[in-house]
Image (tube, helix red, strand yellow):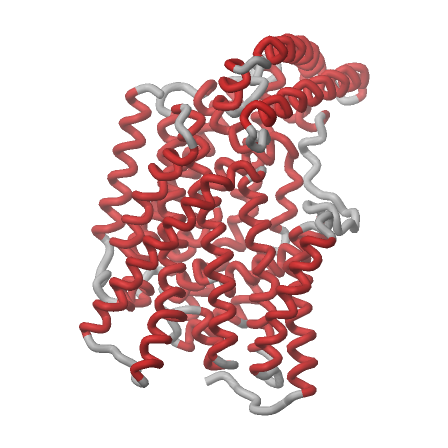
Length: 569
């Protein structure tokens, strides 16, 4: 990168960290460090919630998803508005008015301590793994840019984020998220403008969209009912609703945001911001990925987007074979480019022959790339999928001076604020649901002296460091598992449905503690069985399966053994 790009990255990163910490108040007290004294404006909470979603994973994984698979991923978010409406009248007012630090603290009041503990443990494990994926996203870009190992790249991203999370608490995170959203949206729009201007003059935006349409990249909806297909209208509407309800309504990383709002109405307003704006922003990110595909229909892309794999194969004894693949790739690209120009400059009816030639060339390209990817896997011993490197290849090879710096600044800031937020929530659950509860049970008293406040804050910082280390270990391997946006949601969907089921039981008056506890176990067992015995079933349906199982088993057990019913306090 040019020195101007580095100046932008350094300047923006320092400013965000300094301003976030400067806005932090009472970070030396539990309520200030973990809940910002319930003082954050609704729009800050709303932007913070959206920033967590529109994170480095989105910039890296979703753009790659759009380039390789088109707009179909947008169906994943179809259930979001419905989920936000349901949460605004159910769990949001219930949790906010209860005065809890964590969502799982409420479960002990409604059911018992073991239900709270098990749910919190499931959250900790799922969110820590997801945080590892978040760290992996910017590490992928740094690895691609400098040729560093993933271990070094992960350490460079993860260690500062851990320190930032330990110092600032939720206020620093939320205010940094506000600036992150501004930079991300500006960066995305700038990339879009530069990309459109970089198309051949005779092609333009209209021609680029024609090419994307010819390749099937502009088909957003799939109305088939197919449990093995991840992105369909029905999996997004049903499975997506359950996933979003669990994520925004029961995941401490999100609950902690709206618990920091002053009132229930403010908390609701913060969620509605995501309901209104998340899908349009996600569509913009996917569209950029689609246009990258069209851009590379006229400008030769690399055979392998992962530069480390490209260099490794060239230097191996498979180098001559790889060189032949590059020649075949170049020939296929020339044929595709010629067909793409014909498609862009003619009507659909007139471009039948060009579309056929485009399809043939695209098939050849896919075949050559598959061979190159397989070769990279054999040489490196790693998963050769390089969907996460598509956007970095475009940014560093095609954008003018300044824009790569803005992009890197956006990715690093997005990663740092998201990582810090998630580590903060992990520390909160660890201390409030675990350490504090066990310690005070042993002391047989609830302590709240200044010395105890200091003690628990130290414990929270230690927990932050522990979970940060755990997440960094996960991050080293996460990029090898495929598209990061899919990986993070696949991780979460294994747990989300069952956790949501427990909270749904909490809303049902006749549900009791044994039903909740054993229902949760049953939900996890069923999801695990489906996941390993029927791996072709899409992970989105795991959310429905888990929640429904917990509710059914919980109600049956509550009916059969209605002893000691409990009610919310």
